[in-house]
Image (cartoon, rainbow, N blue to C red; front, side, top):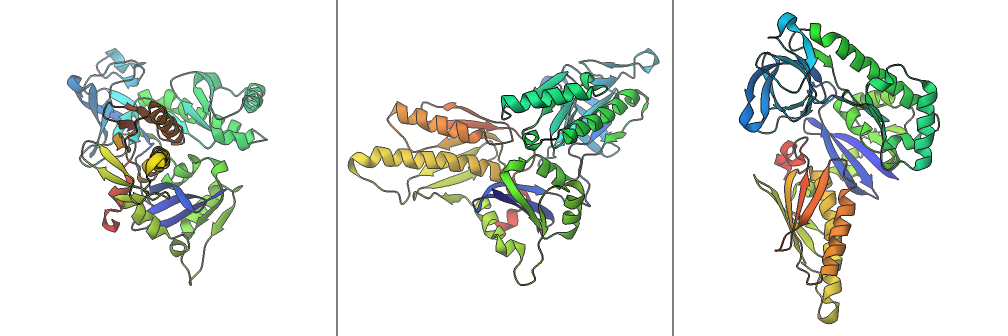
Length: 400
């Protein structure tokens, strides 16, 4: 079992999930007292429609604009030009219409925050979607647990449950008593019912839902089975965790002689996560170069030298270790978009297939949608990773 460590770096919180003393995941969050738009649900005003790019620009406050891709057919819209100001669910927009949206992407460099008309509420045990019906389950839940949960939901007969779609998360696997899951479902139904009943009567810029504190949301997105303790040296964070997760093993670290950062070598791990070169246990190394268009990763044999008949085995060994490390580095650094990986060339199609299979399996551990596209004719492996928030380096550039 790993450790979940939370401490302050610069003006933000840094969360590191350790697996056998090695960072498996790094996330950064704003301090609890700071406001964050991500996850909030607003009644926005349509400022402009840009048909050429299939998007709209919305005002979510008097001084904040958001970008909305027009890719969803169902939207909660108040058509201001309709007779009587009727509200409806529709798949088109006009200027000055009001629309209910959720902020799903942070502002990145010169880009505005990204909004979505697809409304979702994410909890520790389930995700509730406004548009849709039925119960879905995480693929990681076994058949027996799915059956138990289904029976518990049916027995509970939760009022309004069939109006929305629920996805039961992997964390529900740890439950023997499903009351926390059922209560979470009821709370989400209450929030969505309130939005559905009132949005047509509200004024622009109304915020229907404030997402939980960012650090709490990050923790809820990490599988409970991946750690056995949460450790922090931030008193306010510890109080917040104790209130939110009374059943978790929590520790408020206090030691004037040895800081939490020193104990877990936080600065060393962070500098490694920001550096260009990453050494592999086999003696090879990665060179990671983010560019404006894509992230380029080069795999080198380095100190791993071999001769004669064993060379093929050595190269495959380096590439397989590199594949596992590439997946880890993408999680830790939070790189997204197009990623190109230049592995060491291998003549065997069997070895290339083994490499791709290993890499694809490692990428599946990423909670952010990541896809292995293919290997090009030149032997370059293409990966895409969904953009959701800034890369780790954007918050800690001065430590590189």
